[in-house]
Image (cartoon, rainbow, N blue to C red; front, side, top):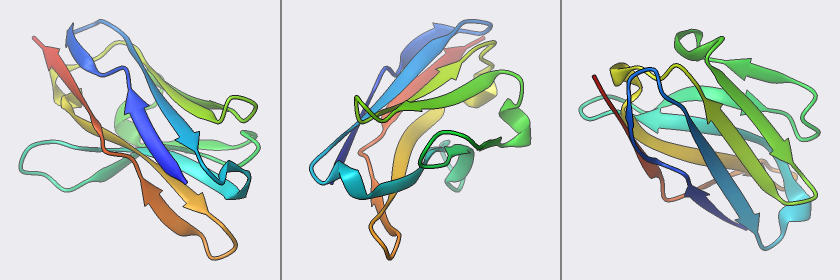
Length: 117
């Protein structure tokens, strides 16, 4: 399975962006998925995660109430709606999927989000 992120870019503080993660290949074996981010000089961190059916989600405290994760399994795509963006949200955003019975981790290449103050 392959993951490709899109939707990153430059936005002013207070603005919004919607990231997409399109999956291809053996998508029928994708289980939970998530969005992670890595800011310069920092470790990669979990932003939001969603179960295979989309019925359960969880968020990092720093994005609760501002970001919304969702997925459309018919389109093999996961989304991250980001509202009220802050400069500290600037990072490369990655999507991750857990694949197969062993939960193999599959990562996308990342998309850069830059929030200006």
